[in-house]
Length: 164
Length: 464
Ligand SMILES: Nc1ncnc2c1ncn2[C@@H]1O[C@H](COP(=O)(O)OP(=O)(O)O)[C@@H](O)[C@H]1O
Ligand SMILES: [Mg+2]
Image 1 (cartoon, rainbow over the protein chains, first blue to last red):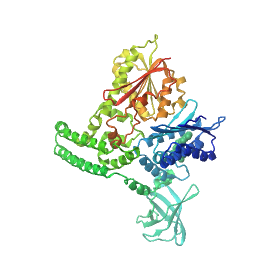
Image 2: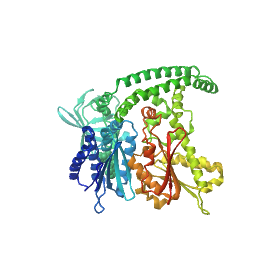
Image 3: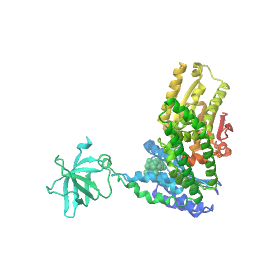
Image 4: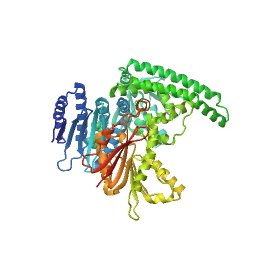
C-alpha cells in the first residue's frame, strides 16, 4: 500500500462487505482534491461497479487472491484501476468484457449504448438474471472511458479514465 | 421441429375462470387455438390473460382477442394480443420474453435527451438540414434527367457534375463544418456527446446515404475503424448510389485525416525497409516482423516487389477480427500469385487486451526485429496503452525497432469525425505519446509526424 497526495492504493479481500468502506474512503480521497459533489458521486459509483465485478467474476482460487485498487489524480485526468486475478475459467468473461467495452466506446454518446443495452436487457431470457448493464451504466452515468488489460501473470485490470 | 407444426397446451382466463386450450404456433404474433372445454366463443371475444407453461413455469402474456376462422382444419380460430404484443418466435423457440413495443419504454428518456441542447446548435442544425435537402433534391433531379442514358454517357455526365457543381457543394459543406467547429469549440466532453447524439438524429438520412459514414456509424463488427473502413480510405474508391451520396462519400475520404491514414501506410513500409537495410541477419535468418492490429495489411504490398523480397521476411499478423485477417490473407495470396513466390506469414486472431493471458506471447512467438501498429493506440486509454506498449517493447530483439501511430490532438477533422462519423479516438499530445513508454526501458525513442501533421509516430529502438 503506497499512498501519496495524488495516488490512493488499497488492497481488498474479495468480499462484498469490503466494498462500502472502500467507497467511503475513495469519497474522502476525491473530496480532498476539491472535486465537485457530482464528480465525486459518479466516480464512487464507477469504483463500486468495478469492485462488484471484481468480487463477482475474479478467480480467487490462488492463494491470497485479492483485489487491488489504484486511484490517481492529475491535472488532466483521473484514473481508477481495479485489478483481480483470473484463470482459464474466465475466458468467456474476457471476451464479453472486450466486446462490451469496445462496443460502448464505439458510440460518441454513451447514452446511445445505454439505450441499446436497455432494449437488449428488456428481451429477457426466461431463466437468466444477469443484467449486463454495469459497464454501460458506468460509461453513461460516470462519463468515464473504460478500458482493460490482462497481464502475463493473469491479472485483469479494468480502468476508468475521466478526462478533465 | 417444424415451427408450423408446433402445438402445446395453454390456458385462457376470463371472468368465469380458466379455459384449457391447445395452441399452435401460426405466426410471430398470433397463435391458432382449439378450446378444450367444448364451448363456443364469438368472434372478437376478449380474454383477460393468456398463460403459457414453459419449462414448468407459468408465463403470463396478458389480454388477447379471439377471432374465429372460417377454414375447417379443426381449429376454432386465432388469438391476438391486445396489450403487450409478445414475439412468439422468441418466446417459444428461444425462451426469451420480447415485447414488440418494448423500445417505447425508453421513449421518455430519449426525448428528454434533447433538452440541454443549446439554441445556437439547434439553429445551426436546422439550417444545415434545410440546405442539405435543397442540395440533395437538386442533385437527385439532375440524376433523374440522365438516368436512362447509356451507361458510358451517364458516367461522363456524372463526373462532370461532380467536378463542377460538386466543387461548389464541397465549398458550402466545408464552410458548414467550420461553423460547427466554431459552435462546439468550448463544449465539455458531456456536451459534445449529447450534441453529437442530437446532431446525428437530424442528419441520419445523409449519414445512411454515405457509404463511408454509414459504416462508421453502424459499426457492423461492433467496433470503430474496422478493416472495411480502412479499405475505403486506402482504395479511395468512388462509392454511392447517387451523385449526392458519391459526393458525401468523396468528401469524407478526401479529408486530411484520411490522407494521414494513407500516408502512414507508405511511411511504415519505408521505415521498415530502412531498418532492414541497417540490420545484419545471419545466414538463413529471416527478418521477423510483427504487425499488431494489422487490419487488411495493405502495406505488405509495398514491401514485396519481387520474389527475392519474399525470402527475407517472416511476418506475423495479429488482429482481433477474423474478417480482417481473412482480408490480409487474401491479399497475401494475391501477392504470392503475382510474384510466383511463397510469403512466410503467420496469422493470429487475438485481442491486444487479452493476448498475454491467452497466448503466452513471448514464449510462443519469440522476439521480433520490427514491430508496428498503426490504428491501435488511438483506441487505448493511458493505462492500457502503457501496458500494451511495454509488452510490445519486450517482444523486440535487442536492437529491434518498433513504430506505433496515434492521431495528434490537433486533428482538424476531429469534430467532423465525432459528430458526423460517430467516430471517437483517444487523441494524444506529442509529450503524452512520448511518455507512454515506461522509464525502465533501455531504449532510444523519438516522435515524428506525417505530412498532414495528424498522424503521429512513436519510434522506439530497444538498446539491450
Ligand atoms: N473484473 C472482471 N473480471 C472478469 N470478468 C469481468 C469483470 N468485469 C466484467 N466482466 C465480464 O464483463 C461482463 C459485463 O459486465 P457488466 O456490464 O458489469 O455486467 P454484469 O455484472 O451485470 O454481468 C460480465 O458479465 C463479465 O463476463
Ligand atoms: Mg457488473
